[in-house]
Image 1 (cartoon, rainbow, N blue to C red):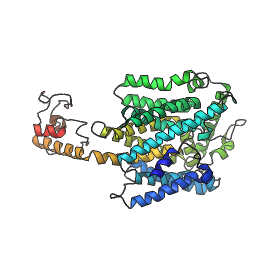
Image 2 (image 1 turned 90 degrees about the vertical axis):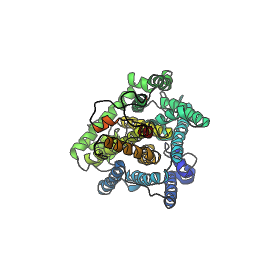
Image 3 (image 1 turned 180 degrees about the vertical axis):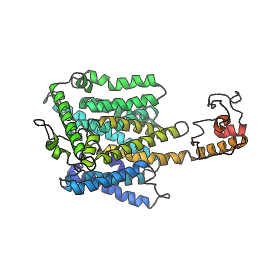
Image 4 (image 1 turned 90 degrees about the horizontal axis):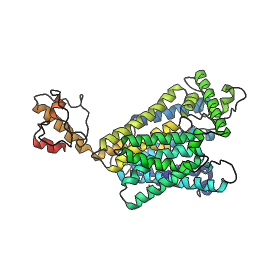
Length: 464
């Protein structure tokens, strides 16, 4: 399991530092193979076989991969080792490993802390790179040590919301200090990267956190200090690039528009099967306007997926995002009041990070990032973990609702129009359930005997 934690902590890098000298470009492949061997061995020790296809996003991911394989072998122009199909195959292995080994809250906690370590480790390299080259190039944007400044920003968005939430309620003092340090270092690194798309995605992620929080004003102040203050002292911050773009910034925007235009023409010419997986950059000169730079990638995950593999594949990709979001949201609601705080923070933080990444993907080709696919895999693990901690509450809710309907002289219709929710989350009156009364449901704060609920005491205790 330590190998898997180490793999997660290295995900922001194109090649893991230090280990690059051992295996070269195959370092990640070697780590992934070792993790897959461990997952196979661990699978034989598990008492319950994992439900790999219990969620819709898991089925859509397999379908996405099969279409990608078909597109690569029928229309691919690049060699297999340089094709995105290698990354897709790696993420299918990651899907198997994650759902096999992340089967407890403790393992989920360490995976997320490993992702926070990845955020801090990558941020340190970004800051070091800026210190080294800031006097060599004007308006230097670091990030080449982690692939690219824009890609690092989109990867950091996925983790920052959870680190922020965990900072406030970590179980141990060292955990809070670790999250605080990772968050501060990441704030500096993201400011130095000056990614406009990353900044917009980060704002979207924190808006989700603010909307779901109970103390919105306090969180607004903290997030403002964390995100806005570091940008005031730099001439090349993402806010300044948005408000006062330089000639280089305008040229970057024009290149993106040219890539989007060419991508749209590819979609119109090949709406069903696309031009082939990994062929966007090579075929762009055929579809770009004359006289513009035509060696770009798509700079938009959705346009690039549709242009390379067709509109049906784009719908599958959007479906993966939607069902992953829905799994996070359902888990968050299920454990909001009665479940472990770690599970609630993981669901909310990863949900916010996924939304932020989806916004940032409008200006980046970020559909094959490693941390992004890890978050998708964790969206399949969280529902199973939630079922482990709240099944008794759900059964008690169904039983109490059936007794209340019987008491009203009606046949209970469990599984009909009722949606099972934890008792601690929703205390519902018998009249409202049976549909014979217009009285609103009694909440936890209303005292028993207030005239709203006439349920016997043994049922009231069961619902609490």
